[in-house]
Amino acid sequence: MILIAERINGMFSDVRQAVAEKNKKIIQDLAKKQTDAGAGYLDVNVGTAAADQQAAMQWLVETIQQTCSTPLCLDSQKPGVIAAGLKVANTDPGILLNSSPLNRRTDEEILDKYIEMAKNAGPKAGIIALAMDKNGVPQDTDTRVAIAAEIVSKAIEVGFDTQRLFIDPIVLPVKVPNAQTQPANVFAAMDQIRILAEPAPHITVGLSNISQGAAERSLINSVFLAMAVSHGMDSAIADVFDEKLMNILATAEMLMNKQIYSDSFLKAYTSMNK
Image (tube, rainbow, N blue to C red; front, side):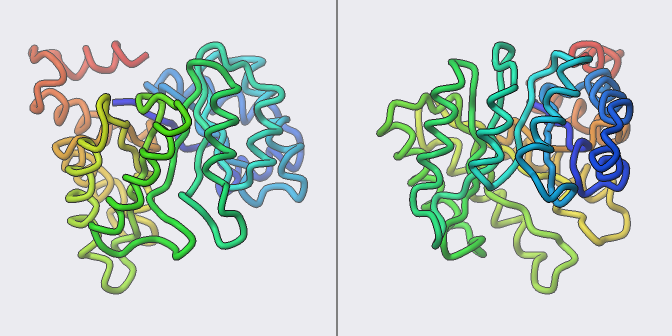
């Protein structure tokens, strides 16, 4: 599982305050602790923490890289913010650009921009593309898969390796009215997305979205994660500090024969991901 740690995000009050005060220690502690907890990438999302999002993205990238070499996942639906982060990012260990829809009413070419930035960022750069388009987030399986197929086709057309492509079928908060049908739709979409190309694109989600606003958030996230692993999901933007979630992930991967069983498989999984 490619784990993308979620906590360096301006939606969290400590990160928002750190950006406002240019407090490097908070950001660097989060970077190091998430890496130690098993993160393969660190998501970096300014969110609404700063009026000048480009400058804030550069400050975050530079601050993290002063203390941590973990690959970054630059997270913004504004290409200019991604481009600003790339100017100061070390892409040698790899980098992800998150996240672009297929298209937008205001920008039909947005996915092309993300692919081009990733191509220019080196052979280890990938993109996370959302299975949504100018009509918004799909509510059914078929539309999700159709958009994902268009994303894959576009990547192949411009010579972008599908192994560098992460498709996010988009999970919606289960607490939203009528949203309980959506997890099943997402799982069905995953089953089809993983056979859209050879080699297959990665499948990822913003895991915490499923439990937004709900009680028992960790439980909901963990069960969804385990179920998604059985449908071919191999990446997630998640809370790597949630020990129960990480243990359930390790168990799910072991039961899917992605990890070798031993009586100490939890300890082995943790060690392997550090």
